[in-house]
Image (cartoon, rainbow over all chains, first blue to last red; front, top):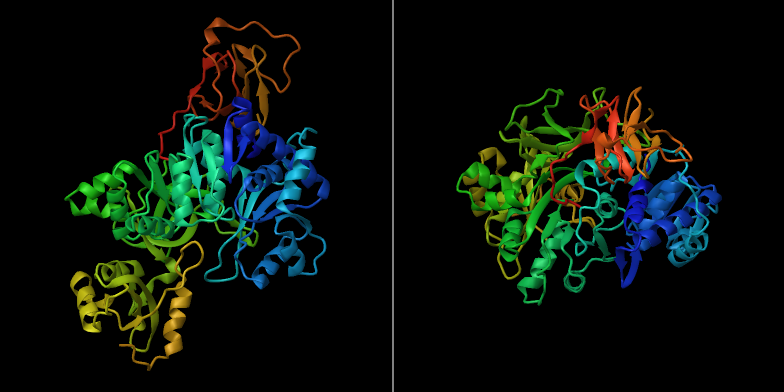
Length: 506
Length: 96
């Protein structure tokens, strides 16, 4: 099966219904489907095996995604925020490619003249020209639909492969065809090169929920677009939600009366932030979605009722679930394993493994699935007795102090309860005594003083075990994040290394 | 039946795509489906006329056969005269 079926069926069911809105331009399902077929002709004629997008979100992203699928090519959206050298390296790995977007930048980046470059407008014009010459979807010789380069926060980016079967399984397992009512609109602010951006297109078109694209996120534009388009749902990464709430707290007027649901994911949600959000949007349903590129998006979720139930509960075990990512989808299995690959019981932290038809676990560089089809996520976590999944950072981020595994998140959560602390990052630092010890980098709230090291150590000691008490505490102006709000722990570790082992930081 | 094969009804406009299936013959409206539709529509068996709904997945009792309806129709699906039914999925909140 080919993902182009998703758009084709929406177009068959309601050709004139508006499926996508971007900067005032409206596209019906029928028009999008015709454009995708037109694009597929141009792509097939080019002879390129990869269709790449180097552009912000627009209708061209949807047309390129489905056009590539119809032509039997891989769709490879690229991160336009990458530095020139990194981007050039990725383009080199997919040459020759049919590249849509910033054509001038592609030409400047390298001597590889095999790439066929199209500005967004040229691509759309050409697709329109070929639109009425109907191209049938071939039985795809290429069954990889999408290739996404991982962000490479720890190593060189890997090329994650998602097959048509993985994406179709995800959609059929999580979304009901045509289930959206005519007034439903999803506000999509994630960039097109992120798995959430691809999943948003597929899910919303299958549900026949109108997509409202926001090409470049900023909180004011998001608020005004949510109001003017009467958005009923939205997906946000936690940093986006934090910035929206900061604007609202400053009194930015916002009509969010249509907004029934907000889904969030793609990074750690601070407990304080989600509590504030639930208070600020009492009638909005919040869903925490946990997933990875390699799993075709969401594999576990904490739904709206579970959020409210946790918030209102006096049972600490239920209350704690506000900090969980909920339970696995009915169509996937999740297992926690120790370093020797043994399955662990509830409560015991280890590495999260996942299995299911939507899980690709496959890179151009090789498959990461084990013989039984389990994918090691490299995320650390544990399950509670009811099957709620708690994340404890990347498996590579776990601090091993004298043989004891410490998850950075538990220390950060405690430090964030201090009224003067705005942001906290705990990392493993070299220690002759323990192998690794805990180092924390802190950002102090504006107008507040950095608390004394003794006070901070006492705070951690009182709430956690003494092994969690930070050896070194460093105050910084800002913590290093990537553009999706993911903390770059490698960079945080460098902050400590730069100061040298002897330097006294508080 | 190979996954990805499209089967057309001989009694209505209905079409399905095979998600999973073995060596079985699927009927729509009581008449075998095929990759090509006959030039003339065949009469529908009234016992299999509950309709085929777009975007729904249909399964047999063993779960060995799973079909996705890609075009709606008046006929309903069966294998060897035994009706298939809609695979109900637990409704999930939108997470994208």
